[in-house]
Image (cartoon, rainbow, N blue to C red; front, side, top):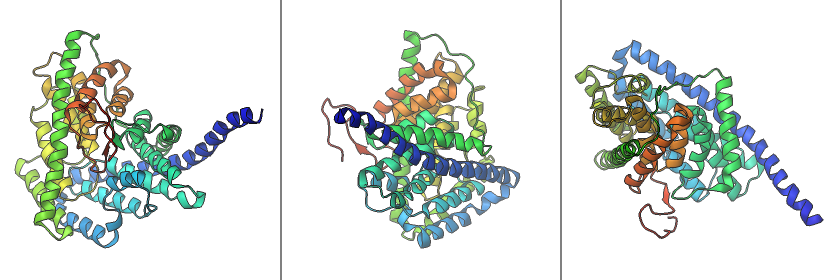
Length: 414
């Protein structure tokens, strides 16, 4: 009887404990995401109203570089630091990660860098969550779970996709493996953070796919072909961004000068081509990709602007630019594939991200949450094929290989 009672009470105690922690994580991450989204909306509006600010991007880069050089070297690794702490817990993440990455991201967007917001949301969510470690007295395993919950909460709240956020926190750590021991905290934290962000009055962009054709062999074949293109694009984006960062470190030894050079390149390119289309988040262009055919080279331009911005050390994230690249690439594929352009844009939106981040399940759920369940089968095929073709090195260097994509045997996590 005692064993049976323990078997019933144990999951209840576990649920109560992690529900309490998830409420705290959701409130912290959701509030931070609300502040981030409101700040980026302000920064974008100011920049578009005063385009001359883009000329100051090199100086903004210097300010960001100096800020991290003198106060943020311990947290400069960003998302990779989070993943490393989950793999091998060492020390509580300094709380200064949150204000530094928030300020750095707003600076990037205010002065015209091409960056996203997911990296910032993950870092604020996880670093704030980690501050609960000492007061609650968490052991190493529970701290890992707490950090994963913070990642899920940040992702789910910044995009308005709690299911995708929950799975992202479980899936991003190691290719081919998911951590089910954190399922409840990740799910609860992502759902609560999303609610908190909306309670702050934040509204997410709505994307519409008005028509999804009935599932067919021809449609699935098109989804496979598109998935190959998405996966290769995600692979080249990750490789290109890492290569630029490596070259910048080799040729520019003084870290604060790297974003100065990158800022000069981006600002010069903006004024040379005469458009701000490829900087910032690019949300208006993403929305356009679901409405009508665009220039077939839009995805390539965003690719270059983002790789230079992030490779030279500006703060932000890769995911929203990947959404832009994917949506516009899918739009361009509408010229050769017989699927509706809005559907192809949605498939690319999720598919390029799936390949670049090696998170096909989270990306499929993201597509279903944003575009509706009807698009799920096409987006799902595109995401898993993209994942297959994207290789084993994604946008997160600290992501490990748990199971290789092609070999029939399990590889050890490294």
